[in-house]
Each structure stands twice: as structure tokens, then as C-alpha cells.
Length: 393
Image (cartoon, rainbow, N blue to C red; front, side, top):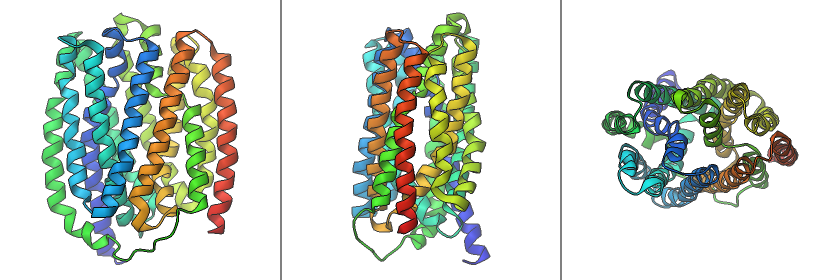
């Protein structure tokens, strides 16, 4: 690959990262407030965990549909535009406090998650095509880094507005501004890089079944996902332990998770290019600390849980996406991304219900430790199997 082609590849990755940055300002900004907002609307911890888990499940199931459509039609860009367009549901969240309560808010949250699912396989497949000559771990790490800059900026901006106004309505309505910027930027990026992206798309199909290594890898990731207490429940617990007078701390805590995630993702991506799947042993082991810390009703424990969650998230997100590309053929890649994320979505739903129930019934940190330790042990064992099979491919 020539120097000019590498520059074009980096340009395309960075521009797609800019789109994700703006998207994260909107939906990660909202997600930093959503658990507390749902609590304000009358939802219990179990309901919040179920809504978030169902939203992730819808997101991941729709990724399967989006992946199949992308592979069959090659229509990556229409799916990307549709998916980002549905983020418009989030600036409408203030209407739930006027009518409909948490039920309407849940419907809007689920609609945005549908959009997330439809666009993600197409976007990740495009990145995988672009990145094959510059290192997939590096490419996905750079994209995740930019993505997380938005994920930090969004919650901090909403925290500032919430602290100043003390009102969820103007806080969430303000998301309309970055949403408009997002859609305008997406159109400009499409016009700028679509020609280069089309030249990188493989024309020949290799066919064949999904490798055994990919199946073992996906199963390991699902077990790790169930073991990891979801971030929205960390934020829900934060809302309880900090109280309504310090409500602005909750989105700040979410921003801190993303701030830890961002550099960790880039570092993990670079290490992945050197050692492969072995890098995932780190987040799989760190997962064990998150649930018991969250279930200790103290500010220091919730803050520590958020820090560990950020490390887990950052050290696996870029690697997850790069590994799927390395373990699958180009013609099946968007579909396998969809299968992978659907399986992860089931894991998130189970984790949300499991740990939400533990919080509602005050089961305590010992129960959280036992559950996460058992599940993480299974995930590590399956990761070892996947690693061996990947080397044999």
C-alpha cells in the first residue's frame, strides 16, 4: 500500500470517527442522564435495568438485520444515514415528563437503539475494509478514541446544563443542536470519502462457513457481557448514593467512564495488532470487580466501579470489532457483526435483569462477586479455546 493510500485510509477512519464523535455527544450525553431521568419518572431499578437491557437487545438484534441487508445489497450508506437519523428520538425525551411518563421515555429510548443497530454493522464493515492495510486494531482504536471524545463531551455538557437549570426538559432538549450538526457532518463525510471507500470494498467472495474460532470467541464475549454489571445500573446506584442535590454528578461519572475508555481503547487496539486475542484476558478479569463494588452503597465504591467499568469497556471495544473482521471473510462480515452484536445484546439484557434484581432485593456485594466470578471464569476458558482455534486457522 502506497503512502498516499495510507493517508487516504487514515483520512477515512478519522472522518468516520468525527461522525461517531458527534453521534456520541447526542446519545451518550442522553445515556448519562437516562437512568436518573427514568428514576425521576417513577421507574424502579429493575425497570431501568430491563429497559436498558431491552434497548441493547433491540440494538443488537437489529444489527443482525442490518448486517444481512448490508451483505446482500452492499447498501452500507443508506443504513448508516437511517441509523443516525433515528437519534432524533433523544431530543424528544422531555415530552415524557409532560405525558406518558417512563413508558413514553422507554419507547423513545428503544427507537434510538433501533437506529444504533441498523447502522453499526455497515459502518464497522466499511472500517474493516479500509483498515486491512494499516492494522485493524489501530483503525478501530482510533475510531473508538474519537467516538469516546464525544462520549465524554456529551455527558459533561448535559451535566453542566442540568446543574445550571436543575430541570431535565432544557437539558435533554439541548441535544437537538448537536443532532443537527451530526446529520450535516455525515452528509459532508459521505460526499468526501465514498469514492475511496468503494475502491476498498472487496469484489471477490470467498464464501464458506463461519469459522469455529469465531463461534468460540462470540460465546466467550457473551459470558463476559453477562458477568459485567451494566453502566446504567452503576449510574442508578450513583443517583441513590449521591442524592437529588448532587444529581449533576451522575452524568459526570458517566463522562469519567468514557474518559477512561478513550485512551484505553487505542492502547488495546495497538496491542491487539501485536498479540491478538490474548489482550482480552485483561478486561475479562477486571470485570469481576464491577458488580461487587456497585452493590456497596457508598460513593467511593460506585466511583471505583465506574473506573473499573471504563477500563473494561476501553480494553475490549476496539478489540471486539477488530477480531470479528480478522476471524471472518469479507462477504459474510456484516452478517457476522450482526450475529456477534445480537448475542452480546442478549448478554446485556440478562445482565441488566440479573443485577437489577440484586439491587432491588439488596443482595449485597458477595452475591455480585459470586455471579461475576463464575461467569468470568467461563468466559476466560472459552477465550482460551477461541485463541487456540484462531492460531490453527
